[in-house]
Amino acid sequence: DAKTTQPPSMDCAEGRAANLPCNHSTISGNEYVYWYRQIHSQGPQYIIHGLKNNETNEMASLIITEDRKSSTLILPHATLRDTAVYYCIVRVAGYNTDKLIFGTGTRLQVFP
Amino acid sequence: DGGITQSPKYLFRKEGQNVTLSCEQNLNHDAMYWYRQDPGQGLRLIYYSQIVNDFQKGDIAEGYSVSREKKESFPLTVTSAQKNPTAFYLCASSEGVGTEAFFGQGTRLTVV
Image 1 (spheres, one colour):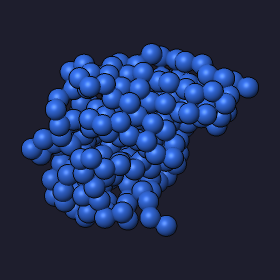
Image 2: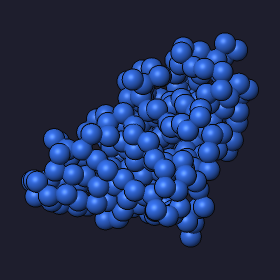
Image 3: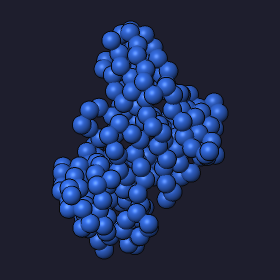
Image 4: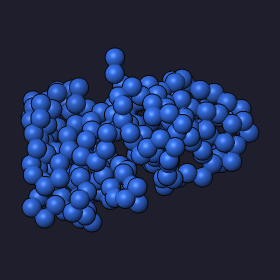
């Protein structure tokens, strides 16, 4: 079963910030949160990941709550090319185990 | 260029035939993964391998087989036992926990 829950769809105006929420209430202490996006019929593209602290890179920012039960991906200035399905993923790791568990994702539509 | 390559992009097979999907990476990654994606759905884990000559079943391994004889290669065989093999198949590789996982561009398998 997926360890994350996301809204199925969201809209965002071009140039505005897109804030994509994710719940991962059963996350364990050593499990990372990853975000990927997928444009139709292509392989998922890595965006960002984090464990406890907030993270920022050239694509996005990741805000993780203090209790780690939820996070938000922020695209600061959305463009039409950001229209995609965004997946919030928990990376489960342990002895002889390392796997990315995908949920159903959020379909983000950026409009002009 | 460094990356992960899946071939072919499109594959057609008759029902009852086994078919092998190729996945090659030149990133020197230890871990490799196979996912299946159905229309409008997220990715589901089929098999994964953390090291050469070792692999583990994912959530939907029935009807599939893999091998990991070389670090750079992780082929997936869709056997005739797989009840509904038509899907989009994605391969990924990673250095390990806390690092980015890279995805290939996928193979769309159609069984007629």
